[in-house]
Amino acid sequence: MKAPVRVAVTGAAGQIGYALLFRIAAGDMLGKDQPVILHLLEITPALDALKGVVMELNDCAFPLLADVVATDDANVAFKDVDYALLVGARPRGAGMERKDLLEANGKIFGPQGKALNDHAKRDVKVLVVGNPANTNALIAQQSAPDLDPKCFTAMVRLDHNRAMSQLAEKTGKHNTDIKKMIIWGNHSSTQYPDIHHATVDGTAATDLVDQAWYESDFIPTVQQRGAAIIKARGASSAASAASAAIDHMRSWALGTDEGNWVSMGIPSDGSYGIEPGVIYGYPVTCKDGKYAIVQGLEINDFSRARMDATEQELREERSAVEGLFAK
Ligand code: NAX
Image (cartoon, rainbow, N blue to C red; front, side):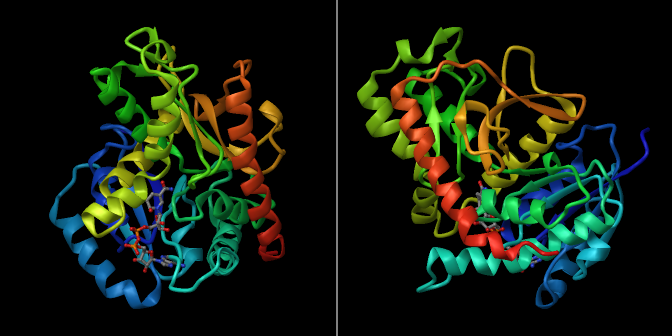
């Protein structure tokens, strides 16, 4: 059996946390041969609830769960961690403008970035789930000057999975038949789900669906899926978000399948003409614990306009938070 790795989860007593921790402890994220020590971070008022979650984790008697650390101190939560899933965030309150939301989250992700900088393993893999995920990831990254900027990623995998599921349903195939889906840009309603490179059971997706469906049905459905779930369930996506977080980390740590790729929000290096530095959804392949942007894809005018629109939103978000990086 391998030596245990340390996995931090913030917002651990929240609804995504509740759907996430048990799957990590069961080995779904890092494999059935990889023991884990869970580091759970919550705000002080949620520590009692967190205690209950820890009791349940223990009651599962998971063979792979080596230990649990539960705390309200980020310096303890991120000590020596190999993986960090930043789920806890400040939700948008009534009458809150986007700027207020970014600022409130800056107060969370700045200090957490600094704590990761000071305490985490040097090759820590950080996934930000808490919204606005891309810009929260940027704040944490900019507050961690001693860590490689590539350690910080944001989750667009739920959007990626939603897009695969929609295309599978439309074409009467299974989601395992869908390859090479892409979510470009921000995890927000400006995200661009791109099927131009996708295949369905080996056939180009664009040969199987018409442009009207793609433009007027598929794209808005994927972009607004989160809102549709809130309307139906009376609560935001939790199990599917947790599942996507598991998928994101698993791909990053254990690699992507040959002949396929996944979408990850990562620091732009200027690929595809995107402003360097913003955390942008890209198609990536992963190998040996590292991700690489898929290069050389042809981008038509339809895609270009949408990729630029979501980039513009990320540039604006970045301008709004530039003063919030923790030093
Ligand atoms: P919950 O409100 O159920 O849970 C959040 C938890 O975070 C709470 O227990 C809270 O006490 C804790 N928390 C708040 N501030 C904290 C801090 N500074 N340190 C540690 N813990 C803190 O929300 P949940 O439904 O679990 O969603 C969590 C986040 O995921 C939200 O920001 C949500 O918008 C975001 N989502 C992101 C998605 C994505 O695809 N990137 C999809 C799902 C989800 O909407």
